[in-house]
Image (cartoon, rainbow over all chains, first blue to last red):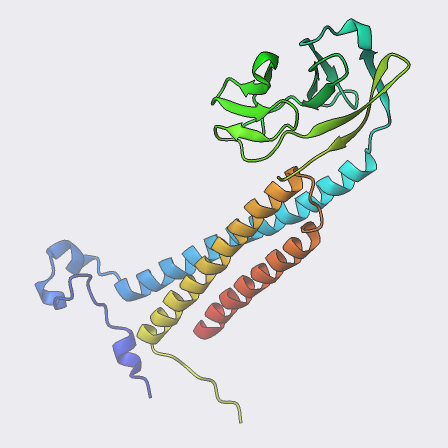
Length: 181
Length: 75
């Protein structure tokens, strides 16, 4: 059995009796326990917005994935082999109007191409062919030139690789390969 | 016979604190799940997307249920 009367008692935060409270508190008594209860309840309600946001985010990723699958790129001519010297590089867009990709000629026979955005905070990476690296100048991220995997700095994920085909002296981009390791 | 359990205000305060704790745990789980899913998605691993979305939805449902229970206590 609950004493309904005791439910209505106002207890000040310091726990002292009402007549020992400062004058302002006697003049404007606040039902502190109820106030704390309502504050806690409202905080839980606010946290629910966070929960909704995370759930919406998850479904937004599903929508993004659907769009990504719909826009699977076709093969696209990038350039001719003899237009890139050994150690040279070329910026291109694949598919058209996508973020920049970077084509690098490592030696006579070897070409590699990656998304140019660093996987840390999307700064453009720059080739350092003599070191066999791709360097992100923003936070000193370093990727392996041949594999695109992170070697040093903050990036954790490899660069997305553009698969290439060399045919009749021409270089074609044929797809994107995203990796987590 | 329609009997309803009625809690004292101090008891409801304790229940609210417990619910707040559980809601916080669920939200931390959702945060971890979302960051892991984004990382997998950016890396091209899409197999995790549907399970992660469903688990996040279940967490949201639990949170909504707990809030509903808290309001039901006051009725």
